[in-house]
Length: 382
Ligand SMILES: [Zn+2]
Ligand SMILES: [Zn+2]
Image 1 (cartoon, rainbow, N blue to C red):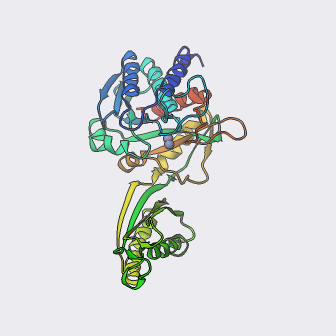
Image 2: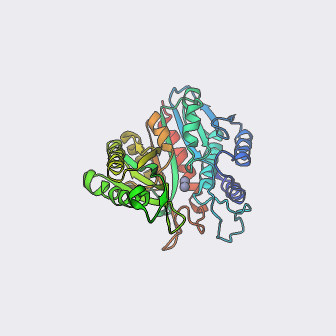
Image 3: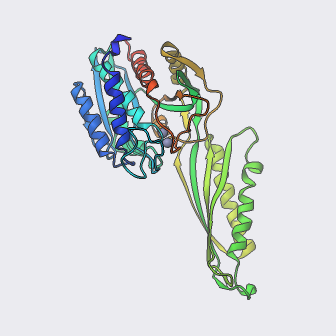
């Protein structure tokens, strides 16, 4: 274990420093500056300002032609931390509740160790992306030429996973995280006196009927073997007991793994809106936003990841995907690769991701480093 001697302790300190100074998506200025500083101190070439605050470190070794990308995300969440840990957030309402501070530290640690002693032949791209939490930082980096400037034949990303015990590494071929869509529907009547309903289309009644109908899509239009969730999470309209409002808003989210199922749900939603218009004499508008696609692992990349994981920890084939989403999906649409869960659970009931009591488990920092290093040495060989 002494190949990493002297690296772990400063990395834990760095992880806790980043934790204490969290930054939201696309404003990770301090975090990005710290990353660049550590990479440069290790003699690694650094390219900043890709996708806003995103940056890429490059390590070349030997004369191998293979190229690998390893990704870490850098952003925090708009949550108020409640851990009371000595390194807790110093920014009210902002918190590393998804462990991206740990992701940064693990990739930086691997970068330091590999710069010192590569034991590979080829080019390694260390991708630090902004704004994973809903703002599509990965897509932004891709649009700004990430893979043209830093070609990768394969890409991997690790995410800490509180539901798996520390020491376990898990992934699967095919879908691993869901597609996330959000929709916002406006139902428009004309507004009028509640006592004269015959003159005023009832947008409230139309919206109520719509909510019922939307909840039949998954049970009636999606095959029982497919995964889908449709939730109505918002409804707003009306302010007075004697006024029929002119407009009601209905909103929510859709989660799927299969683009055909995703298409079908949106199509049925549009058909239902036409029916609502006809039966209630209202107008409707739909804003349907597919903000994150499903995260689909390449079968070979996932198999390699599991084989490599078995060399450094306990590897486990994940039995099913998670319904949450991840913008590494955009990178996997461009390049074959895999998204890997790194178990970090401790105790019986560890706080889940995005919980105000969550914290990254520093005990898995070394394992994450070793996994990054092993992935690089496995792929970047002659
Ligand atoms: Zn998250
Ligand atoms: Zn996350």
